[in-house]
Amino acid sequence: MNELNLGKDTASYVETSIKDGVLTVMMNRPKKLNGWTMEMMDAFKEAFVKAEKSDAVNVIIFTAAGGYFSAGVNLGGTIKLMHPKSLHKLIVNHNQELFEAFLNCTKPILVAVNGPAIGASVTSATLCNGIIASENATFSTPFSALGITPEGCSSIHFSRLMGEQNAQRMLGAEGWKPTAAEAYSVGLIQKVVPHEQLLDEANKIAKDWIDQGVKREFLAGSQLEELKTVNATESVELADAFLDAAFLKEQSRFLWSKKKRGPSVMFFSLWLLRPLWGRLI
View 1 (cartoon, rainbow, N blue to C red):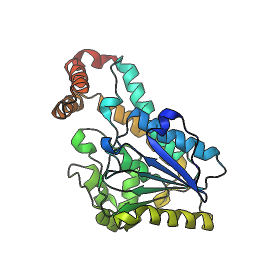
View 2: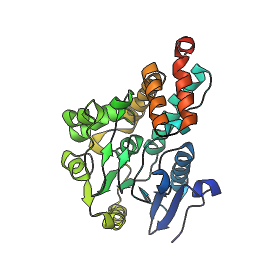
View 3: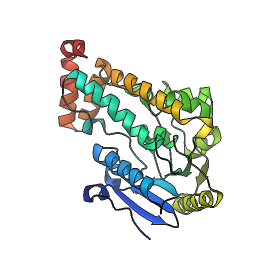
View 4: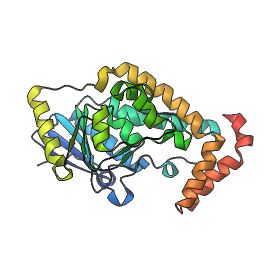
């Protein structure tokens, strides 16, 4: 069994292994719920890029260690104080590049969800060839509760996958968080397996894909160029929402409740000074 040659820092966030043409990229910060810090995102993006260039890789399995798939993007660890125009541009570029890492990957990707998945870890998974989930998995996209707009092409892609009503249940005020069985029943994911069988089943599917010559494609008939256009539009709308006063205040409150004092104070400062710098965006 081989590994991708990743940088030392990258390798501390993800583990990789290659066997019989299948590359497994495993997020490996279980104590941090595999949250998407800048370092974590850089790590799996590097793995995808190197997989693109490797003749030894035919299919990618994207999964995680521990009881959580991912708690989603760690906002306190990604947003920094800077000029409003620069911050707006940073958010746009950061969000667009995150999902383009999945969209632009030309190797088929199977996501194996081992536990709760939140936010961008859910929407990005739907941009892959398929999703297999442990019976312990749940899927949450709490954008409405956070006061932000949909991302990861979910504004159009969710309704194609599971119908408009179910898409709005997840994306809207209800904040529906389906279990693996529920996600399967509405078409969000393609298979549910016992938890201890997840990686074995994922590897079987990946090997079948190799035998069948499966190419990189998108679920529900979505096409790459359309998804990239939607991602670009959503990224601007998301940056607008992130710099809205209501969101900044709520993030400060939430982070303070989690005893993350530094990020909380940063968001509070942004909220407090919003009337002054808002005109500079």
